[in-house]
Length: 445
Image (cartoon, rainbow, N blue to C red; front, side, top):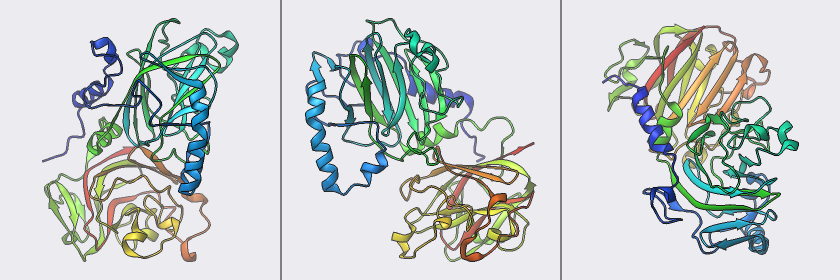
């Protein structure tokens, strides 16, 4: 059966299921009672399950030895107890102190939050410990130059002029009324609705602490506050499953994309096709067989979308602008590595960072740690434009490189094909039963 990558009607249904805009309290449920599928982040009584942190890189406290992190965690509790209190159904901060931070960390999720604040207050919601979905006084003229007049709900810490920094629409309610957020995060991509109106649409949240790195794959939810009282209630979260998150970041393939693997056979493909079989609409590499299979069509600039599943220690690769013969890592523009992120543990072999998943093999290293667990499907999008290649894995950009600028190579082995302008797209198998499906390509002018 030919894969149909989420028609617009189905995608709309997914988004609607994610984005119902009324607060559960407004739907007749008791305050702080989660809707189906959600769990409560604040228990309505005390601060169990939370600690205090400031605006600090979560990678730094992730790297602490366990005993040092526990000391940091314990030292924060007196501060949050002094500034955060339960008042009836409300969680109240006095405008001071550390930011309330969940003990549990999250990857892909849907978050519901109601808040009410006061004039001149400034706040926000940190996602995976990174700032932030902005909350502020949209009437404070002194901050209009910072964008306050555009309203709350943007990703304010994205770079100036970057997508998502300012909200798509201003929908803040008057002081004294409750505002309602829904925030969805899949990979590094974020969708935000404030009071039922979309303010951010699938935008990458930049890593405020190091814009050369993506945001961490997991991290806490933080409630930031400074400058005035803010009240919170109905704080609920739902972790997204793999299939849901993959479909959300892929969306509808849309105009220009063409399926290049029909899920039944290898019509339109060339190379040593006996190295693969088709099972459950996926091409499956046969154990102990290798070689590069490739599309009969050639491509210059393009976007390729696909899903893959790895066995422990699995190794394969995407052949980019492959000429049809030779070692694709060197004669094509590059081999974009497909490799178990835990390859060293699975095999005992050490690899160079330029051999890790998503890397332009032997030339430029990709960020690691963004794969799904072994046995789950990963979604990947690769954009090739001139000498550049960008790889987005499960909603996070892990490589964005200009290969024309590469001058140092793994083991000093040059890549004479890196400057090729066109070639075939394919898969470079290395004897492991790696699986691929839902492969679509859009040529770019």
